[in-house]
Image 1 (cartoon, rainbow, N blue to C red):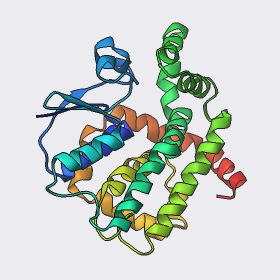
Image 2: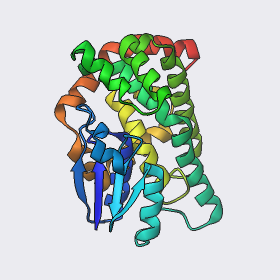
Image 3: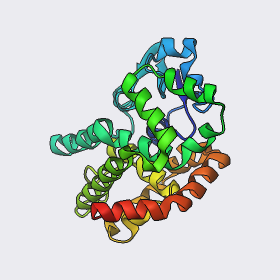
Image 4: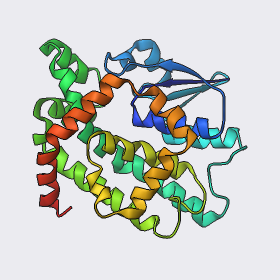
Length: 266
């Protein structure tokens, strides 16, 4: 039996739901409301001490970290494989997944909070805001969260985040010149992994970063959105209120984001 503790718009949760759905696996979900701080519940932190989502339980075994979960699922349920068979393509797939963990996730998290998700937090009392970052076990994550909530798009973290995301898009465009998918001629964990990040940028009104000059990436995004796992794993879990916040805040902040991108030469 598979049980997934997950958040609705969490990109890491989406990444795992995409893999589970693509592999046509049955699973039950336990919703973790990140906005309300469910991730800091002591009982949940017994499963995931990092206070993040997702967490997978398989027949009583606990697996954390979305990249590890997806590899575990592909090992445990080899039907509908999501890793290429040849060594080179598999290495390419793993490099994409590694980049998510090495900097892309940090960047999308920074941009998301700076542009949009700080807004509901700012409506909370000062005590509630303080508790939000004080509950984070990692001091670096806590300091980052506080800065983004307080400074928004003026945070120095935002320029670095946009630079990293622009590099991600450029690398994807290059890879997709030769193949329809990021790690070769078949859909893989690389595509499942990157989809939520590109989609989040779209939700934040940043699609201009690829639509103007990256046709291969633009076509790839159309392809992944057309797959059944996209609607089941992402759209079916998107709460309209959060999407509205991201869409409206993204539109409002785009002129300043564009100015920062011009500064970067993007």
